[in-house]
Amino acid sequence: WVQKRRDLGGLIFIDLRDRTGIVQVVFNPETSKEALEVAETIRSEYVLHVEGTVVERGEGAINDNMATGRIEVQAT
Image (cartoon, rainbow, N blue to C red; front, side, top):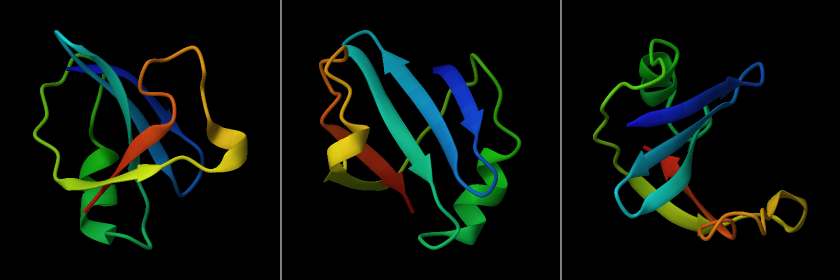
């Protein structure tokens, strides 16, 4: 389920949750314009199937308040 969606003008971030926790999914036009177009229509509580690559977050993007705060999924 979509917990939260943030549009930062070109990048869309979605906090995706299931019974095990939350992970951040990044929709970037440089990775997939098609995925970004779909992400623009996503709202809270939508149920998603996401394909992508798990990557380490950058130095300034680590969230120590989340169990998954050192990784994110780059949607493809």
